[in-house]
Length: 424
Image 1 (cartoon, rainbow, N blue to C red):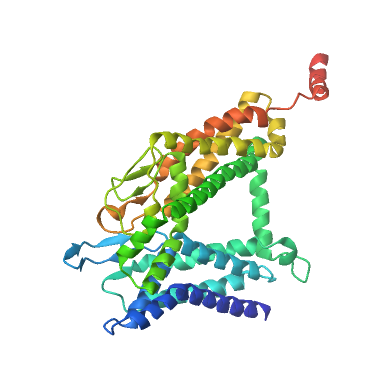
Image 2: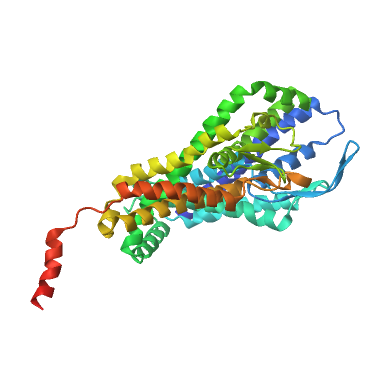
C-alpha cells in the first residue's frame, strides 16, 4: 500500500514539475500573444516554442528548416546549445523531488512513478503535430528528458540526510544501503596512497574552479554595470515591445551560467568564441558579426597589460586551494616519505581535477547557437583543460612542497623494523 502511495505521489509531483517548467516560458509567451498578436499567429506557436525551449534545456538538438528572414535566405541548421540556467532549474527541481522521496521506506516505486510520468509527457510532446520550421530530434527527444530527470531524481533520493532518510523501522531504504555497500567495497579496493590523495585533490581542484566561476560572475556583473549604455542601445535596436524585452531578458538569464563559464575560461587565458573564427581572450578580442543580444554589449575587449593581470587569478586560485587543503593532507604526509614525491602527486592531482572540471563545464556550456558561423559558440574543452592543468599544476606542485611535506619520520617505528634485520 505504501509503495502504491509513493508511486502516485511521485507521479503527481513530476507532473507538477513539468507544468511549472513549461509554464516559465509559456505564460509570458501567452501574454505576449494576447497583447501583441494581430490574429495571424495561432496560440499553438507559443506552446510549441515553450516545448522547444523545454527540450533544449534537456540537451535535445533542435532542427531548424531553411527559411527566409525578410529578403535574406537562412539555411537550415541544428541548434545544440544548452541554456544552463533553465537546465539547472529543472535539475534542482528533480533533485528536490528526490530528496522528498528519500523519506520513503522503499525508493524504487517513487523512481518509477516520477520517471514514467516524465517519459509519458515527453512522448506526448514528441508525438504532437510537428512544427514545419523547427522540431526536436525525435529519438533524442524521447530519451534525453526522462534520462536527465532520472539522474537528478536518483541522486537527490540517495543523498537525503541520514536521519531524515531513516524509516520508521530505523533502517535506511534498501536501495541506499546497496549503493553505500558498493561504494564502500569499491573504496576499499583502492590503494592507500590513492585514497589519501583523492578527497583532498577533489576539494582543492573544485575549489579552484569555484574561485574562477565566482570571479567570473562578479566580473560579468561589473561589466554589465559599466557598459549599461551599450546594453540599453542593443535593447533599443531590437525594436521589441515591453513584453518582448522581458522575454529577451528571460532568455539572457537562461544562458547566464553559460556566460559565467565563458568568463572563467577567459580568466584562464583560453578565451571563448562567439562564432567560428572569433576569439575573446585576455590578450585580445577578435570578433566578427555577432547576434544582437543585449548582454553581448558587455563583452570584454582585453589588452595585453590587462590580460597579464587576469592570468594571475588561476595561479592565485591554485595557490590558495592547495594551502587551504593542508588540513586534509595528513594521510598524504604519512604515506609519502619524500617531499618531492608528495608535492608532485598532490599538485598534479589537484591540477587534473580542476582541468577535468573546466573541460566538462566547457563541454556542456558550448555548442551550436545559430546558422553559419554561429555553429561554433563557446569554449574549446581541450584547450581550456590543458591551459588550466598547466597553470594550476605549476603553482599547486610548488605550494604542495609546504602543504604536503611529509612529517618527521617515526624513529620508534624505524627501530622496530630494523631490529629483526639486525638479529638476522
